[in-house]
Length: 593
Image 1 (cartoon, one colour):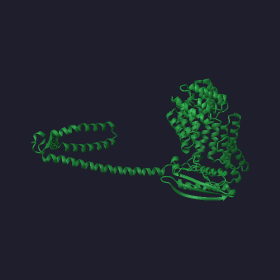
Image 2 (cartoon, helix red, strand yellow):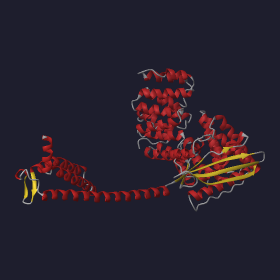
Image 3 (cartoon, rainbow, N blue to C red):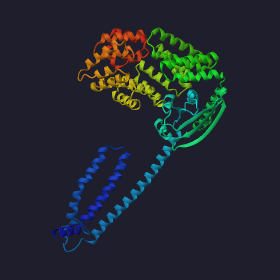
Image 4 (tube, rainbow, N blue to C red):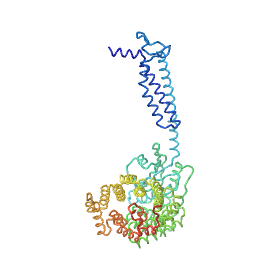
């Protein structure tokens, strides 16, 4: 009964109505304050003060409503009004009016806010549409399927894929995914929509070839993946096998023109080639083998390319591919004289390619690679890479060269930028992914380097160079146990099982490193790729003299990667050493710019 009387007293004193009116008006004040303060860019604490005052004032307002009442004669204490008489009608009417007006304000505010929100959403939608419409267009040329009974004609399907890719890459407003990433989808059953999402492309081109005894048929179709998947067009071409060059030339030109109409209107590509059919077949076989990147395949590629040139010495791409093959051959060779011969042959071939066709962007980039990696002529490498990218802006190798250039001149931010551009063009290439990580490592951004190496290893868990690089980053972050495990995984991948098993002396890294060095030296460097690796291990053991000995050995055999590796944090403690300064001078790099 007492509780019921208490509630009745609260009603008589209009405390409930006063509370409702306060809450409504407080909500309006908070919303208006937020808009006004945001418009004037007021500090955040101003809004917090207003909110604090509103909350603190609420109990005082309730006390006021209990003690006082609004009467025709003014504000009076509620006790002065006879308890048997309810609050005067004017008092109740005033509170009712306040509540009604407050609710009307709330309704108007909500309608205004909803309208503004709708307009903002509409603007955002239009903005998003404009971004989609005006964003950089992108495409991937998926590996053409060989539907022929003769499986030996895979070189033909790859050759057609490359030809179309090369033509598309010449357009600077179209991002074309590089061959390495595209080829990773060979014999892959993934949905086209998933491929487009992984590579972040708008268009996909897929095709197939079917050959018999004397003819070849090529079927292609262009698919738009964004905002929803749809087929744009499809074509079929057929030609006598003896006219294979004309067929590939026609297909690549027409498809490129068709794609350009959709992707970049009003700009058509024209291309005319006249080459001996057999010579072109040898060229395709040579390029196919060169892309396999094994010592045996590269040697065979050089043989086919030379045969192609003997039959027809007028085809510039054959010379350019021959130069690439000679450079690739150096990766499998540590003999200085042989490496110099390969470099000389590569330069002769690339010069002839450019003599025949000075518009081959990839040829300038290959020549830049020879100048930088093989001859350590860094300014020449930069000039040639930039010239090549003007002609072939989608060439990931060109951006990799520029990244290397900025590494050797100690401008790591620019090196990272070029490496990221290369990765965008070739996102499924572990070499480029590791280059990005290595650039972060050189810039001492160990967290990003770690994340990047792990991203590469998620896609390519057996890519040894990523495990090696990750180990160094972990070591310099103080994660020595994790570093040992990364290097142990590298040894397992290399097939050095006994070393890998013993490469785990808990709490004693030095013993692990010494065991590995012993094995490497006893096996005549079979456990490592070059002397710079041994130099880095000696630095981890703080054996500077031994490290310098191996760095000088790397210079003597002209180890291609030596200038880039000298920039690593691994050798920072050698920067003041006279012998190290001499290596820096001879390789032409810049330290601590």
